[in-house]
Structures are given as C-alpha cells and as structure tokens.
Length: 212
Image (cartoon, rainbow, N blue to C red):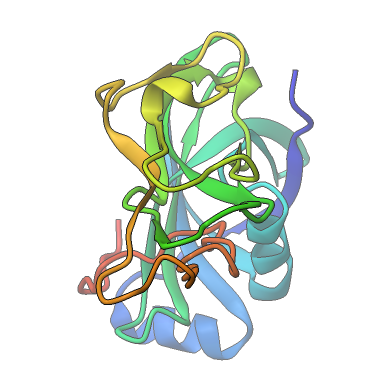
C-alpha cells in the first residue's frame, strides 16, 4: 500500500465568492469533501500545508484529518486562478484502499539520450489517465530515455504502471519519440523537452470559481 500524504482540514460555514476571497487572504483554501454516500462537507485547508502535499503526493492516496478522524481521499478537481498560480478551490472524494479509482498521473522523464545525432526528442504526452486500486496510486510514472536514438519511441504500452493499474489511453499512443530535426545536419543533435521534468500538479484550464 502506498504511503498516504497527510492533510489537515477544518469545516467551514461560509460559501460564496466574497467568503472564499477572505478565506484565501487568511492563508486558507476553500474545498469540499464528498463520496461514499455521505453528505458533502465544506472544508478549508492551510495553503502552505496543502501546497506541500501537492509536491509530495498529489496523485497518490491522501489522508485527510477532519474533526479528529482520518479519511482516505483523492483529489478530484483543482481550480486555479487565470494565471494558474493561486489555488481557488479543491474537491476531495472519499475512497477505500481496495476501491478502484481513475486519476491523471504525470509522466516524468529520466536520463539523457546517449545518441540524438540528427534527431530531436519530443514528448507529446505529459500525463496519462489510469485506473487502479486507490492503495496503489502513485505520484508520477518514470520513463527512462537514456537508450533512445533517432527513430525510437516509447508508447503507452511501454510504460511501467503500478500493480493492478490499467492505462485508459490506447497502447500505441506515443509518449516520447525521437524524430529527424528539421534543418539540422547529421552532425547536429537537438534535444527538446528532456531538460525539465513536466510539473507534478497539472494546471487546470481557466475556470470560473465554483463553490460546492
């Protein structure tokens, strides 16, 4: 079973844009907890603590402490401001360890190709939707690109997934490949996308703030 990242939440009574703006000014993020046939609960989270949790297990199973009780949860939705910086709202869903859940997991690139002569490295897919037991959720999937050269590719079917996990994309979908560099001579190697890892937490497209 994967280690659960801990988060502490408090119940909140207020809702609406004005209340949420005041809450964020106080260093807290509004959110909601739902699922398993229980009533939804409006909550708030410490911004610093939650951002730390995002860096260390946003796509894994989380432990949410509320009113003295710890509940296993997963993040179902994150809403950001139009710059993709400030977190406006977070949705949590209750889960059990043996429950199968669907989530989007980032793909992290590891290593540097030994030979990219005349080629350019492209990564069309930076995250992948997977279905797996909640206890086996992982923060990211690692892809080693050290052995790649011109004409090589890594597809969804080549990914090493957590035990019991199933990728929801077609197995032939290209994750990373090396294509001929336009305008480059055979003596020139161009590398794109290998220097920086993709972000752990994907940025949501701009949405209007929603409250429960």
